[in-house]
Length: 224
Ligand code: 6GU
Image 1 (cartoon, rainbow, N blue to C red):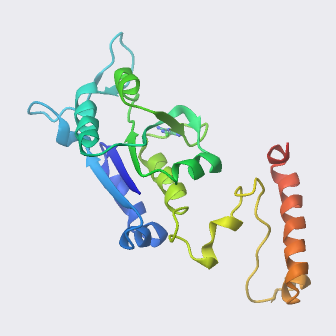
Image 2: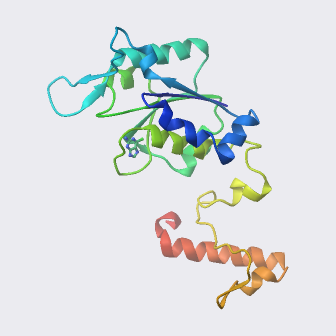
């Protein structure tokens, strides 16, 4: 898979891809992530990427021309399965949409900023608009990092047995069961005995029961 991210703040997006699982996925060439600085596509001397909105009102809008130039240059290089705009008025990201995107070949992600982007970019190029929840962030960069992480960890070979995505919360529409590690007794708090029993059938059963109980308690909406 290849992910191209268009942003006015590439420095904000470097570190998420430079540690842990995402770093390893890139090193193993399971994914390529390319950051594109919108300022490299400006016209004129001031490297201007945003401007006041027509009709008045507070907040700057990312201009159509630099974004169109950047997206068009990338499109000329390869076909994109999705061109995603990160925006709080998009469709809320969930595990199912992350699963869907993880089987694509080339994905482009546009990060909004300030009051967003000129509507003509959305009309012209965008195939999907994604939000990461009902709250407002200063820009789409952190949301793009969240989306990329959710996708990349699903790519074959990225996770090993220990970190397998199959047992994740949400992957089967349920929350994951509680987990414990050593010591088995901490300040009198005991680990559930079944987990120490070596009886894998009983452990599996316990985990299923606990997952269901936890989902009923914390996220009954998932069971409807
Ligand atoms: Cl994708 N962008 C911004 N700016 N705020 C958000 C968001 C995205 N998702 C939730 N809040």
